[in-house]
Image 1: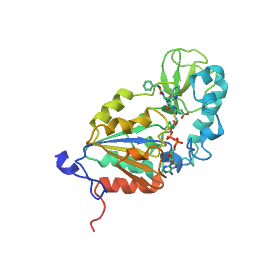
Image 2: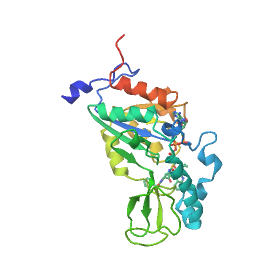
Image 3: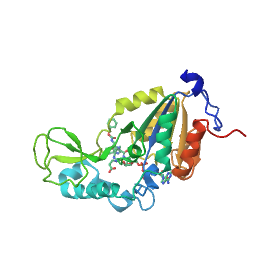
Image 4: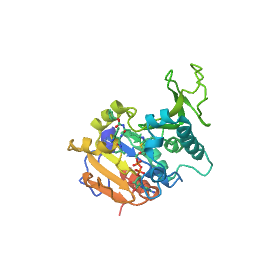
Amino acid sequence: MIWSRIGRIADLPTNVLPITTIVILTGAGVSQESGLDTFRDRGGVWSRVNLEDLATPQAFHRDPAQVHAFYNDRRARLQQPDIQPNPAHLALARLQRDWPGEVVLVTQNVDDLHERAGTPRVIHMHGELLKARCEQCGLILPWLGPLSVVSKCPACRDYGRLRPHVVWFGEVPLELPRIYDALARADLFVSIGTSGSVYPAAGFVGHVRSEAKVRCVELNLEPQSGSGQFDESDYGPASLILPAFVDRLLGRVPPG
Ligand code: BV8
């Protein structure tokens, strides 16, 4: 019976509660060791370019070619052979596979590294870099090559209406009802590799904290401005601390 196996998180420094549903939120820090830039760290994407010029609907309508070039570069980079899932992605895939209860993985990332690591169900609340969306007919389709102002939608056959299938600032994130439904069921909320700068994702921990039974854990390279909202934190590179965290959750830490 699931409940008997789930029981308690062994060896975590926490007054453990019976855990059945785990909700995980990942950010750019999970993909950093795979070679993808984060956004707000030193040298991050938004320190080199202005998000207002590249990651808003206004920017796209003002200068679509510039926005296409920005996302074309990132789309091409993601598909280079040196960009591979790292042990953090693999650990989350293992958790979703081996955890006897429910694991809901929500990511702010637009890369496909969780999927490539074997995670079967990923909620991309900020969209996906390897997909395009037609502003004319709404079609969402895989798109691996460059997009341009003359790209043609295969469905409505309109030119120049295809955009990256990502959520820009000022746009409503995807799958919010599904995410908040999972947060309402959560017994454990784990935030991994995110600065907690972007809403509504940054508000998830505050949202679940009102539910006394939910344990909130932060895994990051270093403390963040919102770290005080978590019941426990673990700091270090995600590729190191996440596999160990998953081992503890799965009770695989050898006795003694
Ligand atoms: C919304 C896709 C309404 C595109 C992204 C004015 C006008 C309109 C809205 C707003 C406004 N002012 C504020 C807002 C809200 C706004 C917002 O929050 N702005 C911020 C800047 C204040 N939010 C929105 O606009 C959102 N929409 O509000 O709609 C609404 C909402 C709800 C319901 C109805 C209506 C839409 C936001 C989505 C924007 N799109 N991405 C693209 O990728 O180009 S967000 C962007 O930030 C990235 O996707 C990124 O993933 C995301 C979050 O950042 P992080 O993942 O945390 O990355 P960051 O670099 O910040 O941090 C990296 C972390 O990793 C650090 O903590 C670091 O320590 C750690 N780390 C690094 N290395 C490692 C590591 N950890 C472990 N191991 C390592 N090795």
